[in-house]
Length: 136
Image (spheres, rainbow, N blue to C red):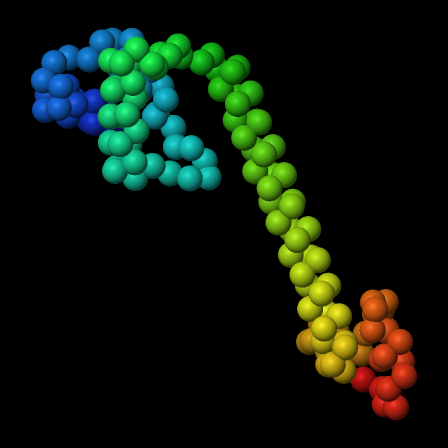
C-alpha cells in the first residue's frame, strides 16, 4: 500500500468518517503517485495537499479529470524546459558575477589561482596591468 493510499484511508476513517468517491480516490492516486521532480513530498506535504484537494472536491471546485499519459509527458517536458531556462539564467548571472570579480582582482593588481600568468585578460583593467612596472 502506497503512502497516498494510506493517507486516503486515514481521511476516510478518521477525518471524514465516510468512504471517499471512487473518482476522487483515482484522481488523488494519479496526482500523488509520482514525486514532483526535482522535489519530493514530505508526509506533511502529502497530508496537506490531499486534505486541500478533498475539501476542494466537496466544495465543487476540483476537476478530477485524470490526464492522459501524453498530457502528463507534455506537462513534464514543459516543466523541464522551464527549469532549464531558470538554470541557464542563473549560470549567465554567475558568469557575469565571475567576470566582475575577475575585473576587481585585476583593478587591485591581484590574480586568482586560475588567472596566474594569464595573457588572455581582455577586460577593462588590461591597460592597468600593462602599465604596471612589473610582470605577474
